[in-house]
Length: 415
Image (cartoon, rainbow, N blue to C red):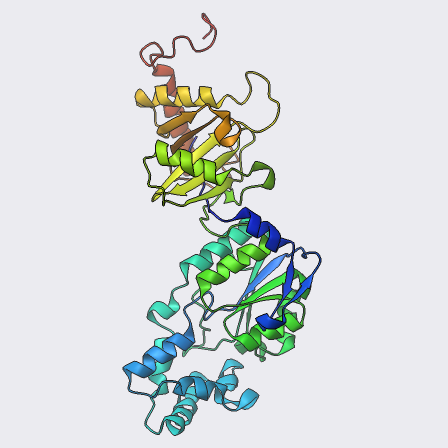
């Protein structure tokens, strides 16, 4: 009975308005509006500056640390157009050693002093630069939980040794398109079309995020909904507005709250302040469990805690159906007898709060097995799971129902 969810507070009225509009990009002063929003099926991410920290920020930091005039690296990257040393490296027309030598020469000419490009290349591919950004990766997982496809489209390069620089979990992306493997770079329209084709979507069905304005503009010209990324966290918020659902608080087995199961967040937050003794500044984020067939179950993230909320569904119900009050009472009783169940926190029978009665319990992290045959486990693992389940059932049957206050539970004489 261990459930889980996490919630996100956002203005539903603002999101609803934004979700009715289709904004066709950049520059912002020339945005055009369509009457209806398309149905997006995929989100495509640039790597550096979106999924990973910005290489331009790293270049500035490296220049300051090494006494190189600020802007040297950026000027060298932009110089020469499609025939530049940088673009040749991105298309794998130069190897890492050839690139380092040629790029050092270009930077030295620009700066008027020696520039060890090999040192910059090392800084660009190690440490924090190889650590994906948590907020964006959380969004990627949320997108996949909603059934959207995800892709990486990056101007990328080979490392010494022959591998490409891709410090990402490849399993989180349906398609990965790297310039050094394709022989073409953004903003070449062909590489955007290639990514869309491999995803099996039209450009109009994709959202594209990039920290380079020209690259975002090229995507928009093909019909993609483009987001120019300045700050990745803010870009995730903009993506939420485009898609109409939250992209934070991912937990396996959860999804954004279904429209018919939305909770009145402000009223819930007020209730939680009292029930959990929180300050009025604590924000609440909500996700809904994907599995389960009876009572809607949510994961709340608030005050540094993860709390599970189970409530009766809306609508007309039979008198004894969906009795969350009964669940709460039984969990509390058998938990006091040492049976391993989540700790229940509070029961609210006032329908004016969320529309129907509900209760709160602690979230218990663990695995959820939806198929009782446990197909993904070895015979030995299945044996241990079934043994643990049997042991808990035995503990439940050993509970003295009078001692825990359940003597009036059910009809007398029934066992």
